[in-house]
Length: 386
Figure 1: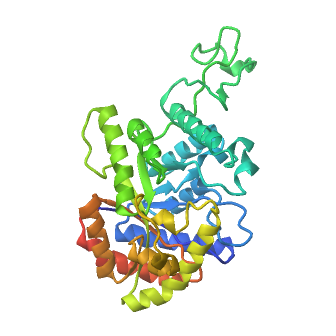
Figure 2: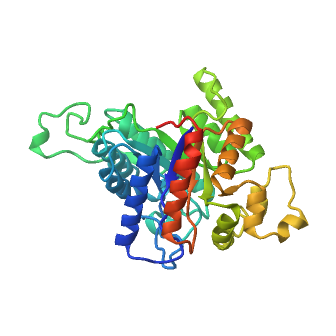
């Protein structure tokens, strides 16, 4: 069983970032000592109200956390790829891989529809979601080419590399290497440095709950992390991945292989204590979350299996009770959380859990205690992949 986590960044309240960085360092050191494999950093921007105040640069934050630890891996959950220049991503993540001596997991996704997207790239506007998805796929293709091909070229809908028309005049490049320049000095092939330490490149993790993304990842040899979902929906996604991977690569994967699930987890001494602390936070967080997607993707119906309808009884429940009964969030004692992990392992072959701990209004000391209880009483019940 692999255990990863996303550090708490105090959502809902704007605090000095020196304090947030110190918290993340401490949690990562705790996680490393406990045997967590990877710490993942999310990406958000322009958090004037404090709710989406995660780091705006997960690569830079990964470098800092890795520098304060010796063995834990660092990943991005995710880099919102359409908002970045793909050559910068290729360079920055390859440099991070060298700075950490190969401790990088590369996480990428298209991202959600929010105000930040078109501030960076007008083509990334999620209001044209199909166009943005094409941009995501092309950007990911460029990153992989840059890491694995020498020289590499690319010509697509959004980017062309090298950009035509540059003729080298710098005498340091004489005589011209015909892999990168024509006889007249035109720049025709590219090379990025440094090359990644991990070969052929750092593991690629896509973040998605969409079956077509799982099919794409299975064909491409990428990994995927899902947000916590009903078992039926999870099986549909993981079956799509397995079928595509088996067909493309000619080897039979175990169900759940190369896949993970991100779950809201909180551990306390008693079920009553856990609910008392987390209920108001979950109700506040999911009410906010559902409001960010008025088209309904994150309303209660999104947390049902595809063939289910939302009952009147479920509609009346608060978010905490609804999500607990559906086993979307795992909040309770160490025994309770361990039982949920065993259940999903046995029923769906979940063997990779990423802890999500963003609880608005919850004191940081309680987050650390939850991590301590999880590492002391939950993780030892499993054969931990470190």
